[in-house]
Image 1: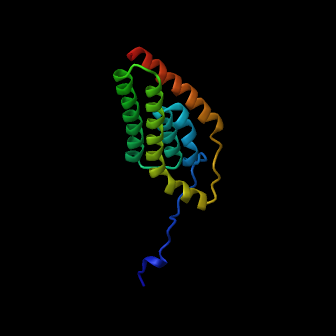
Image 2: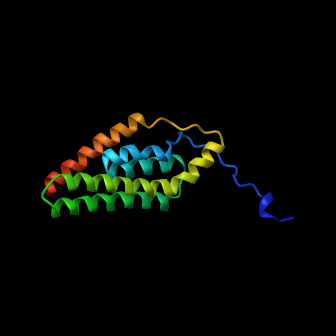
Image 3: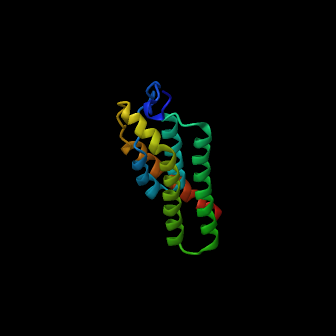
Amino acid sequence: MNDELFSPTIRDQAPPAKRPWRPESIVYPAFFGGPLAAATLGVLNGRRLALPVQQLLLIAGAGLVGFAGRVVVALSVDGTSAIRLAGTIGGIGVWLVVLAFQRRAFRVAVLRGVEAKSLIVPGLLAAVGLGLSEAMILAVVR
């Protein structure tokens, strides 16, 4: 009998070399660090989850689009509140892309017994480092 009900849903695959982060946890660096922080962590986590290269490129592209949107806002307004808000919105937008691609792969990894790794140190480094990098680029552009 060739029924889908009897076919395995989780394929045999080697466990990831590095433990992945929870895709939901990337929201914090995305909120505070902006789109580049979210995209960087998303691509790194995508590699840990062995996502296809096309999905990794889409995550990176979403980060660049989010940052470009922030630059456009910086060039079109005078205050800094709108620029910060654009960074937060862009970061959350990139996180939603990351979540769309990684949620299923992470769930499969968890079902295989892989435990999530803590994102505290890499998340802080990405939020602070890439957030400052975005701020310096925006200062030069303005």
